[in-house]
Amino acid sequence: MKNKLSKTFWISLIVLAGLAILLFALYVMLYYPRIAKSFEVTTHNPSKRILIATQSSDFKNILTENLCDSLKKNICLHKGN
Image (cartoon, rainbow, N blue to C red; front, side, top):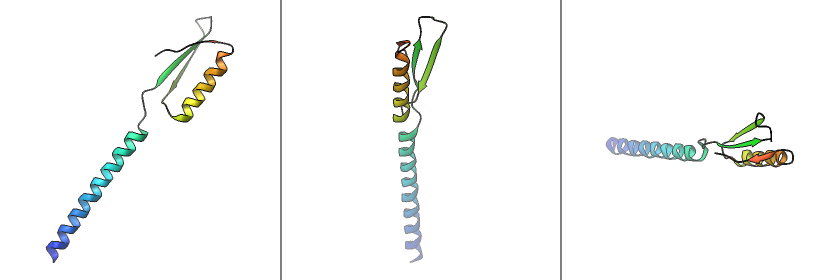
């Protein structure tokens, strides 16, 4: 009886550890920072530039798009890598 209880304990512990590792891997895949994309916004005067870096979250992408649209009114936009 004691041997069966010990075996059940170890199997449960291994299953829980595997589940914890799986959940951690899922968290890392979903929330690990992505490579930042940069947009260079320049005027006709090359000494004035704005560099915007974003890491591809929905909020940051919308914010960057709105900022670039606002700057397009007065500034020539050049998208770079």
